[in-house]
Image (cartoon, rainbow, N blue to C red; front, side, top):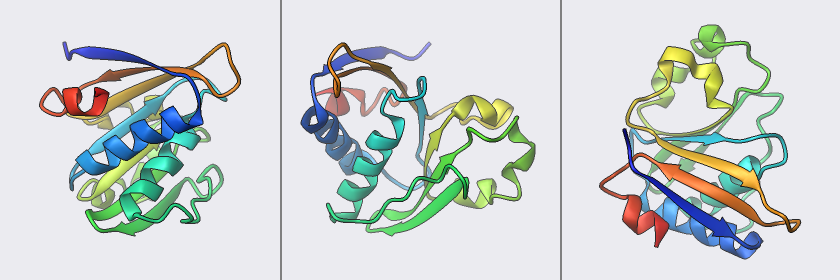
Length: 152
């Protein structure tokens, strides 16, 4: 059972700081699975990670809700942002290039749709809305070798 660390993020700058730490730790083959209810901040975190990893705070990061996947060329290698909300399960992942994408970095919203294709070595980030508008509680699990640096 992977160790879990819980963080309370009080506002968007705290969320963006977590994203910047995560971006510095990403490497080819990594999977980051973003879980939580609608409005918990999954897309906000994914956008902030991609912008930080690109070194471009103005990077256009559209939601992949309708395209299902958006790809980016980052200094650390290719990254793919998946939003699987509209999928019923893993059947459509071949058409989206899942296997090829796994050679790079993948950020996945609604990872429960991956089924058995969910990488066992993924970092799981579960977000819960906080009491204040931009506050959230975040549970980090996986990446035991990098978890302390991410949670710092």
